[in-house]
Length: 353
Image 1 (spheres, rainbow, N blue to C red):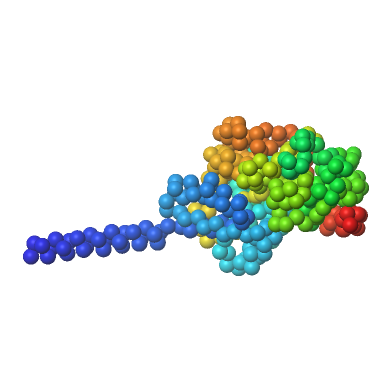
Image 2: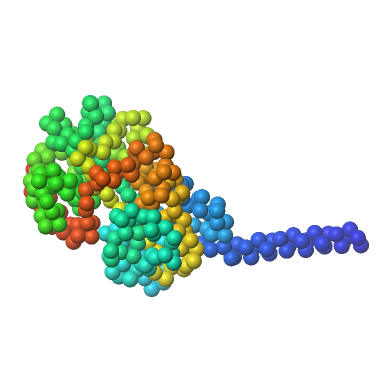
């Protein structure tokens, strides 16, 4: 009888433990985050998502990858009546459209304590989302073909690299960013009013261009030597530079560059609610921002993150060169993007054939 009673007690204890475990699992929240696929997902998960879940074992974060911001917006629109996504990481100009359609909830001090620590560029009027990363356009070169390393955007126009330049054309945002840089270099004073000076300068570049549509992206052809020089985004370029064993060179030119801003948005009426807000607060904190800068070389949007980043990593971001970033209103640029694209198609791309 004693042995049987002991077995019953053990069985009851095991069942109780299992029930407790199931109850805990049932109470755990799942936060659905959508962001960029590929190396962004891989590195953001490692640097931000996994540490958050370790510190908050009652919250599970699912990262749903998307190829671009436009597709993210399409998904949010499709789910507008019954959202299944809680948080989105997307381009600021697309977030403006999502805000206008009521798809994103405001982010204020009730969502995160860190708003006051963010750089001014991270807060864009009329957008219910805040900057989570800064990236900047850089000059790429194959270190075997281009010696010494270039220091100026003018290297793209160098006759030595005729038919060896690789540039993603508009409507890709990299082509738009290069247009604004070229416009300022050519004496333009307001890219919102006109980029004619930049278009004229790009027309002179066109004969040097090998491709306006590099595959699978702009980084691989230059690292392999298929192309000699081109443009790209710093964060991805730094990762691919390491993977290329030094074949891909990355330069922030002396004239400066422009920021591309990825924002973090809280989906309106998203199911996770409080847990989603908790993740946003963590993602905007100095430690999380510093960790992602170390992992993938995006410049942090939280000013307090900078002292936490190693000198080696900081030198590979634009965080130490904020004064060299050209002012750009991406919301205004989105308004004239179609007109810039049309000028490229008529006045730039045909000259490379």
